[in-house]
Length: 156
Image (cartoon, rainbow, N blue to C red):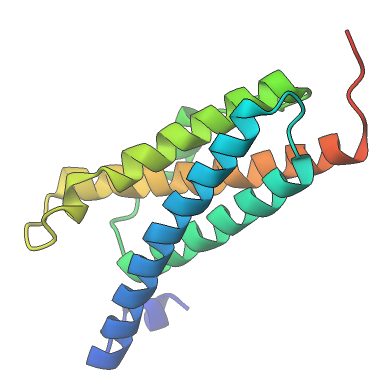
């Protein structure tokens, strides 16, 4: 697989990859904004919707990672920086979603997307770390949302 990934892309493959990145980049922002708007204003979040939306965010972030071919980063370092506390109620779920939103905003506002003709290695590495955080957090939030959906919250 590594050899396959290292092979240069044809012009058609590169065009397809860039089109997918553009689509995924827009779609992640759109669905994240909708999810945040619906969840933050609701007293009781729709955990099923959150699970589905964060699952889609993760899927698209993985495809962006594949298509952009950003520099590798230390996975353990990225995981440490994105420690996740399991969401056990609505308030904790909202906090987890705000954390994911922060990662998404950091990624989409990265300068490498404003001027793609200039390669800044530090910013590319930051984009990769943000992407890894988005992938990891969206997966964990989706799992938490599924658990909360299946078991009603108990008052404390």
